[in-house]
Length: 69
Image (spheres, rainbow, N blue to C red):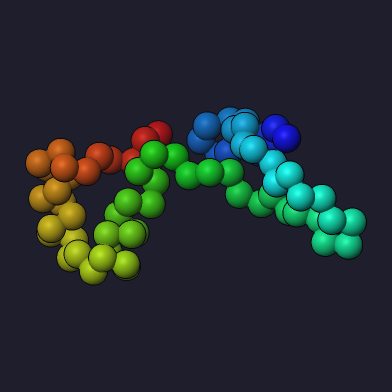
């Protein structure tokens, strides 16, 4: 059930494939999992509604980390 997906920064990333096999609708693996912190800023802005200065303050206080590269 191991599947390898290409990742733009991490190279080849192993994931667990879907164990369900359907002949008429096969599973497509399009995106590798995000890196740690890759979407933190987007989530805080778009879902939580934090303004940019508050996010910068959290980064400065090391409450949240910067995106892993």
